[in-house]
Length: 319
Image (cartoon, rainbow, N blue to C red):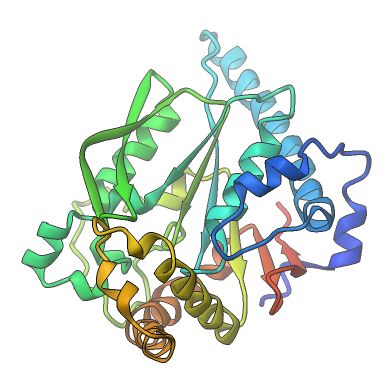
């Protein structure tokens, strides 16, 4: 990691909580956690509370800047949502992290409306992926409707009214036709996804770049972020977490006959473990190395997890 980051060990970061109150209960925390990830109250106090304090300060400063611009232009104030991007690998814990962060930020009095959007909803529908021969590369940058995602982000920042995001079903492993998440001018929007920091540069599998019209710059999802976070861990740890999650899902969600992965529910333990490792090695691990890890240093904050999912190291890039 570049030296442009400030490097904090866990204890030093925890002290930056200052007097930030703990507003989550054990019951709240239980509801927010993933199927095979357990976040302790100690983790919330040491890692999440300092982060929520930092973000609260950033949101307040950004709101002040917007007001100054409105005053200069003589225009009526129009609150613009503060957008936080959360990136990282499959199985690294992004969803649980984003839900806990959302809950904590919503408890600050200055910005009670916090929405969470996952970019899974902007994956191309399975029918389209099959037509393009991309089902085996689902989750790779080329499997997303990037244009639609960028249009969504622009509408969020424009803050002129309600915006609709497509809904993705992990059970059906596909977009849900006719279902949408309504995002109506919240104070903060958290956008969570694998490739939200992607620029299209440096991918071995990248298609030829489309030539842009003269004077027209390329736009990326991360251009709309006010702050970005990358969840990091050793790949061996993430692969183990993926296998553990696969085994847990085999005993729960996969048992539903409507699940796209119902066929895996009948696997015995050795076969299930072998299958999960195979999926990781041919799909998720490749995507991590080729497309996700190269975006890490674009993040403002990098949280490095140890083998037990707890954050051990924090790297913050100052303004």
